Amino acid sequence: MRYVAFVQMSPPPQPDTIYDGAEMLVLQAQLGGWDNLNHLIICKSTGQAAIVDPFSGRYWARVCGERGFTLTSVLLTHSHWDHSKGVAGLLKAIPEVRVWVHELESERGWEGPDTDRWDNPPLSSSEFSLGNLTFEVHCTPGHTPGHVTICGHGIVLSGDCLFLGRCGRTDLFGGDIRAQHESLIYLKSILAKFPEDWLVLPGHQYPLEDGSLPTFTTVGELLVGNTALVAAGDWEEFSRLEFLSFDDSLAVKARRQRAKTREHSH
View 1 (cartoon, rainbow, N blue to C red):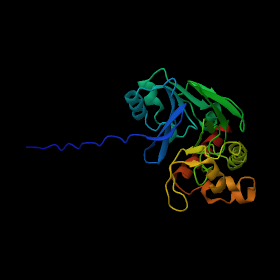
View 2: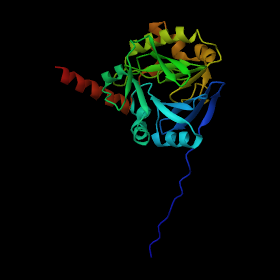
View 3: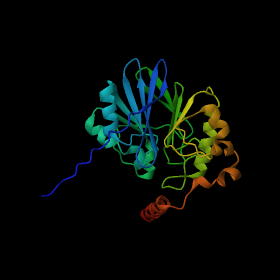
View 4: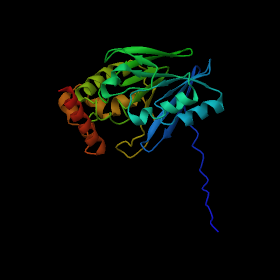
């Protein structure tokens, strides 16, 4: 007689409440093997919700369904696989959802799925509205050609442009170290205008130099404690930062993609 062992899968973790204000609620969950941080923004007055960089569409469709939120939008800070993986699943579950990405992501081969595209030039801002909330959408290239940073109502969603202790790498396909430097100079001036207690919510939970693993910080702490932001404005210092490139499989893949692109252009 054969026996089949059934393994009971533990349910996925519930998201944490990372911000709870008069107008807006923000939920955060760490999903996937790349330490991705997903953020769900909810307009309290309308119940409308937007998910930023969904790793799992099924997870966020379930959260919204259980809590009575109406998921209307997906916001992609950029189009890397680990930030857009959940888009197809969400469109299947909620066909009417709008998917936003910057049009410059097409320069690294992004072909969707998406429904709407920001088109503001690098180092400038556009807007996005969710219910009664309006956010600034800043085009901050460098990690990718059309990376955006989303700001408003007490939060900064920095994607992979800025982590809590450093910035995103620039050696992947579509990355540009000089564009990243210019974006950080630009963002430093933008962030300096915000109240110091605004929350900065990055795209990944990476350890700080002291080994701690926070999932958010404040604008005030970021401006003085983020190595890349502190170096921004001094090209020699910035260009020597070790975390701008890595010798790993992703870098090898990026070199192959660049070589293939050059071949097709000739």
